[in-house]
Image 1: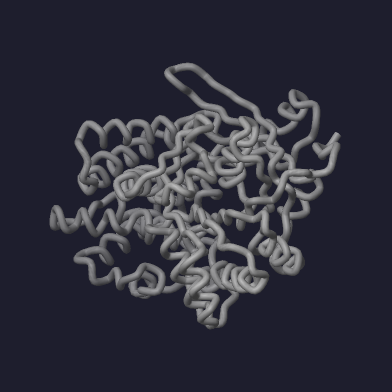
Image 2: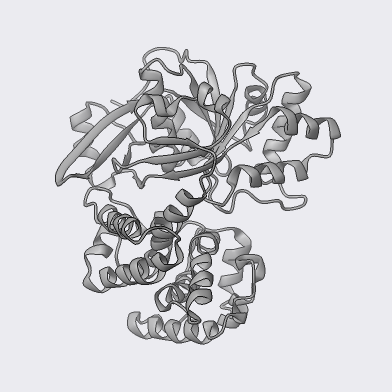
Length: 442
């Protein structure tokens, strides 16, 4: 029996969410369910799929219902919780359902917009219908419908994500009155999110179906650990009291130190290792961590290369780095390397490059482990196929030289050939990867 709703969806849709992927469903939507259960919120979520439409069909077939399974090790004990999520109404597609999305955006009940369109999603591209361009159109419609502004909680892992989203939206707005409306009535929160959400438990799906008593093709597995920091005025906490629901959510005036710690240690280590791990034949993160060679590599980049660039007490940095290794080694997470590999070019720019630059400034030399991660990225992208923006995938498909790749300042924000010794180290490591794994055609 397929999981489906027995009665109509009655919650007022207070959240429009751009992104129907594993992370938001296993993180922020799970939090909303917790608030609803405790009588703190009483609101529903309308998912919007920004590109493609395969997930929409599956979501709507299950009436927006799905199950979140959290498994891990806490204080040496195995823990597992299973919760059904009821607060999602369903999924709409920006190509086929735009009029319905616009009507939802003009609803007086709507108060929040969540998003996770990856690091590549928040950008301004002239004459291109990007995610911020779509939001600009929706806010224009909401303005003309005489509805108040809304609160944005973007979860894309870029610095000052709320401010960057606002700046992009305003660039797409040509109507001065709409721009004033956005400036005065809409709130854009900067956020930091942290939970490893591995997604659908393919190997154990049927076992869970038997345990649950229904088929759920949208189950999401993740770790018990979660953390969210929100930089926002008090009024946002009053409307969205996540912290009062017993969740590890912090409303703060400055999330900078939390962001640097998380992005460099957790996300940076992910992005710096998973492409090489995939090339070496691993499927899941915990498999990679159990391998002695990759475990040593992770320890090198965490303790010797990333840690020195973070201005926090040594004991705090070491404790967090150790927790990252423990979370990576979670045998229940089933965190696929290829899931993390999505849009790796933008991720490497945000998660790895700043550490390389800071390390170089501190020591006068390059961090060898993080530098090698660029070689793994090139090998992965040239081997193909990859999931990234078409212009990026098409560029790598031409088999460009290392020098041409590193010169793409539109990819990296700078010409990486200008870093002393970087080009030579990347070329040497790329040749070693080709020889080690037999990718002679790269």
